[in-house]
Image 1: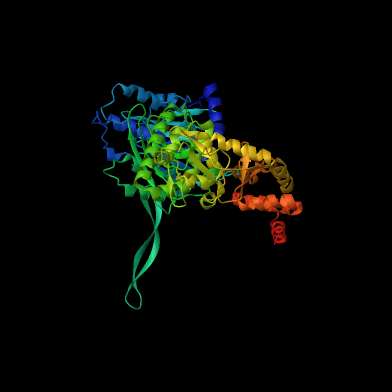
Image 2 (image 1 turned 135 degrees about the horizontal axis):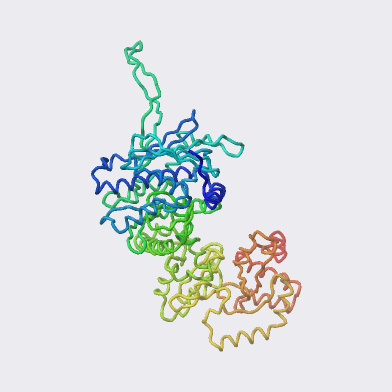
Length: 638
């Protein structure tokens, strides 16, 4: 029979498919298996009303037959098959799908509760075979027909359709694998281990058994005995026809069939985890978009899990066929630590099945997932606070970044998941903090340092604690940005005890301090000149209780932010500094000593000023630039 030509647009699309649409060649097997599964779906559905089919549900199967000598892979199904006309229409015209036509025909006749979902809705997956094969032969026989049909093509140059003999109903897709090149070892696709790996990765949950001959080493008795009369054994290779896919995924089974322990075992196997997940979410949703999900919040952090190719993402399936291994569009980055699977029959796939045609369904699913994840984390916080604190230690940074992301767009959704230290042992939510506030307290006080212990020791905290008020202790610059994004909690604003007005002074108190600063202007200017350019201002303070001095800042950059910028990747970032202010306690005896030295011994006053500035830096957690010089300076004063 003369070779027929693809239509011009089909020829161009075939070239595009082979070279562009699919990002990795190995998915060809997923596509051919999915088409085989679709064909079986059709015949199985017809068998419900046609007793002439002669096959029970248990009789349907897909076979994979690799042949290294012939350099072919055959995927065989006992599905509905095709006529010569259907071969012309479905294989001769790219992007015309028999599955899609069948689904349209059945929509009006769908039996109650019967699943006739068809993945191959675009008619192009078949042509992915040409990424690894230089010739593809399809031998098929339609149910109800006597004559078989052979369709054959070497790619864009055309195809032939001829009658052939075929005993059984169904389709064989025979792919002649390309010769190896320097860039690609195509022969690897003929290896049994490779085929099993691809089926496991992409088609493990196809609903029909995928069978293949697999060799195993078997021990057998030789019939001889050793000197002690024990039987001797030897080994031989035997071939068994195995089912190499799981068929029914664990997340598709009901809770009565699968326990939480079963789910946890599945998680640990898939993710090579040592620890149990700290939370499990199981969903079976029906409605505008139907889907099933099994999600896990890990019980331990993998430091490289969110970097580059290791970046997280939930695995997305459609009817048991993996569509995306890491779908980062389901949940926002603040939940990217969540692992698991989502399986939906309602996804609109594009022609490559690797990405989605549009994301309306994803948005609906994602919104529901995030609500359930949040609810599970809140439940964990209520029921097992130590476990939640361990989770927060591992993944709290993701929630914090989510609060700050997109100008605080998600802050109200996430705020109830944030916890903060109020002591070295205790962490609470902002809501709990406000509920515990005495009536006289008007703001939420916080202090920042590189550790809770250090933050608690800041001299500016003394007055707050002396009034019986709790403080929140922040241990990273990101924490400060989180509070800046949140702005308030239940109407209570945040107060940085290092930089903000504590709200304890009356107008008379403030006026008295201003007058003191004016009276001591010459003295404070002297101290400012003595301590150097790093200090932009020196002033008297009424924030201090037992300490002689403290270091604070003016402007938008705090000391903790300065530390963060100092570790930045660019020289410009590392140069960013806070405007440091040295505050002196006029009620402390050290101030009286300094003032006396200023009046009687300016050189000594200069050295005392420098010592106080360095002490203020040490209390603030700022690294002293020249420790040896500081030690020498202190020694001179003895």
